[in-house]
Image 1: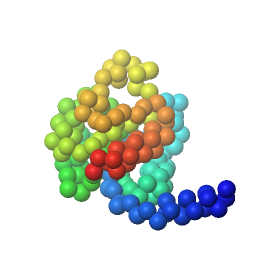
Image 2 (image 1 turned 180 degrees about the vertical axis):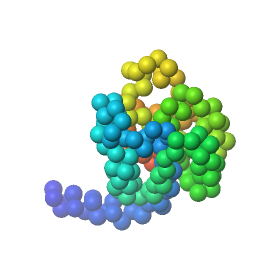
Image 3 (image 1 turned 60 degrees about the vertical axis):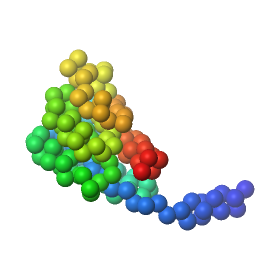
Image 4 (image 1 turned 90 degrees about the horizontal axis):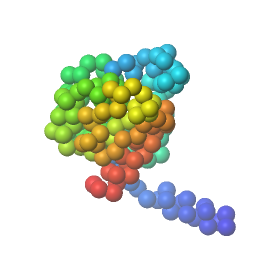
Length: 165
């Protein structure tokens, strides 16, 4: 039994996956994670979440490029710059989720598979947070699992990319 498990692990390690590149975007106020409303957003800092993403990315043979901005135009520019550099986008647009047609249009324009993530369950919060401009154009949305939402989003995006690219 153990020999079979070791052989299976060795076979998996022999498989060489082409590395994928994923842009991870963090929107406004996420730079304050760890101190901003920890009852809603948790106690991890953005740097800690990024480290968790990098650890998971290594397991998945994915390179992640993380960026945070409080400015909508900077996020739009980053999405435009992703074209030809990255195979997918993982985005927590923060409050721009509910307000930004510009982010939606940028994602649509580059036509890269995108997963939307949120730390809190936006559907259990204020009514204005129930609408997302990004969800209808994303391949999926994950919310409500704290920092784990990012890990689940990266796993889902990686699975999708490996299946469809």
